[in-house]
Structure formats: structure tokens, C-alpha cells
Image 1 (spheres, helix red, strand yellow):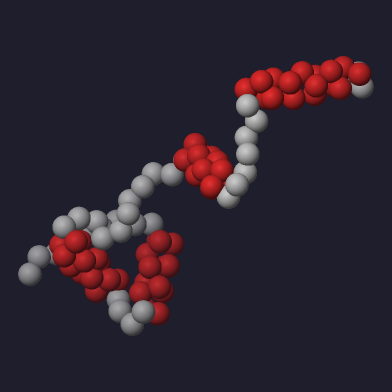
Image 2 (cartoon, rainbow, N blue to C red):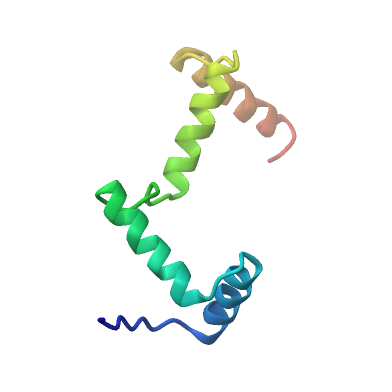
Length: 93
């Protein structure tokens, strides 16, 4: 039988031990379950993605549009900016 060693910080280890214990297994068993699931799936058994602010912004924009939200046209945007600048100038800003 082979041994796999993984280094994690102390807090992560304690949190993992607690979680897996609540599921009725130790961390070593949970790692074996992960490896078996990966072998069965032929890869990582869950989606691995990198999320950043741009991704979040785009997802929110898509969801907004799908829910019926409307966006300003380029000309409407420029007019809005011109109006805001004019209003600001009138107030000494």
C-alpha cells in the first residue's frame, strides 16, 4: 500500500478533520473517496474554475439582461454623462 502526504496549514487541517468527522469518516478516508471519485470520473469530480471580478461582473450582466433588464445605447450613455456633468457644473462640482 502506498502513502500520499499533503501539507496544509493547521487551521485547514482542523477544519477538514471536523467536517469529515461530522460525515462519519477521517480525513484519510475522505482523500481516498476523492481519489476514487476522480478515477471514476476520469478527472476532477467537480468543476474547477478561476473566478475573478471580471467573471462576476459578466455573470451579473448576463443575469440582469436575461431577467429583462435593459442597457443604455452608446448615445444614451453619452447623453447621460453630459447631463450629469452639466448638473455637476451647475452645483459647483
